[in-house]
Amino acid sequence: MIMENNVPIRLGGALVKKQLALGVLMLFVGGCVSIPSRDDIRAKYKVPGPAQEEALKDKEMKDLLLNASVSGKSQAEKQDLFNRFEKAIERCIRERRSLGAAFDLCVTQYRLFPNERKAAINLAIVHASMRKEEGAIALLQGALDKKDEFFEDKGQECLERVHRTLGAHHLARDDAEKAIRHLETALEMNPKDAHACYLLGQSYGLRFRASNAKEDSQKAIERFKKGFEIGPKLALPEDYARYASLLLQAGDHKGAISILKKGIARFPAVPAFYFNLGQYVRAGGDVIGAYYLYTMAALVRSPGDTHAKLAVDEMSKIQAAASETKDDKQYEQIRQIVRAAELTGQEGKEAEAAEALRKALDANGKNEFTIRYLLGKALVDAKKWSEAAPLLEGCIKERPWFAPAYVEVGRMCESQGNRPEAMKVWVRAMEIQPQNWRVQEIWDRVTDEARKKALDKLKEPAPPQ
Image (cartoon, rainbow, N blue to C red; front, top):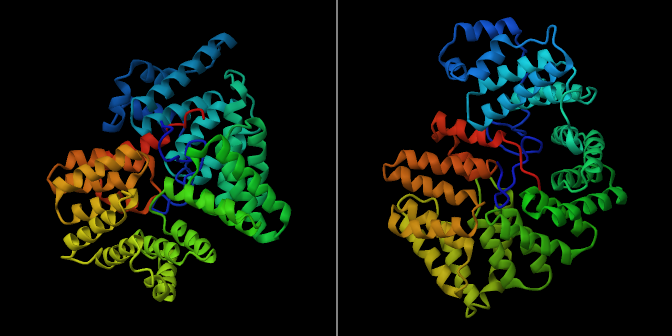
């Protein structure tokens, strides 16, 4: 389950942006999946292989897979059978049983109840978990035309989720018109769905970039504003960035600056936030403030990040003006940050980078979160684990949604020979922020079992907001 204080992951009924092998949509990536026949499924479980043996230990699951039938049953009996499938599928997911068993349960339910919307949705979710786009989308599209006879969709929550997910899919394909149509329907059905608000902000923003229509810009801003009002903890970095950009273009500089500051507080290692805020601060005449923000953009850079590169270019332009304030405590901090940025990544310079970051922390006494995290990372690089541990643990306690801190704790555990603990911590990182580039770096290093645990966790639906 996606906890409220974690970075939101728009998965299940929502959207995840991820640049790893999982693709743009973790829910919807890949090709079609053929749906096996009941005879195929029964044959597999009658002569089970290792993957099926676990399912057959569950008597209820075994009976549903091998013997379930609607032939000659009354409406009440069919209702009871449908409910049994629902409970078995929920238990299969909750108890972390194999994806194959969940798929077979959903296929069997779908074949027995082909006109049931909930059965189509269940199967679509499993297709999506297997990263099979066309099969999942076809099922969701088909679900719109089905009616629930045996399932009570309270408040039309399932139907709303279908529209939201289809909207996210069309947004990922840059089809703003279809995305807006589905997402507006979803928001009408659930006005308190922050995910739909953020996705609509992105969709109207996409259409605004093509149309330059003021109406699209206003609608994008309205949707983002509503999303931040009803579910601020569910916002992703791209929501902050796009919202701030739209506010700037609309002439609301104060609003744009406020959103970027909140973005940095929530996601403290995004170079674009520091660079863009630096541009605004510089335009206001605060050279030393801008210089600091540019150095931070360079310090938290990710491989190939354009904003970090732009920040370095801007630093060179205002370095002379900034150095005129060399007696300022912030300038001393900046000087140490620049040194740390230069040393980070250089083999054999890990301890020096850590020392520069320590001096940067001491320079103004503000105990900044981002620098504390980076100091912890540098100390892990330098194999000074006793010093790194309390810093990183403090970062996790302060901001439990910040996945990079978990990545560094996992690296420390692995370096000390405690690989099981490293896997446990890395699974946590993958659960809460899979789209973060630091998390993506460790994806191929985790065991298959740990990766499966993370993906299984992500497949669970988000709790009510």
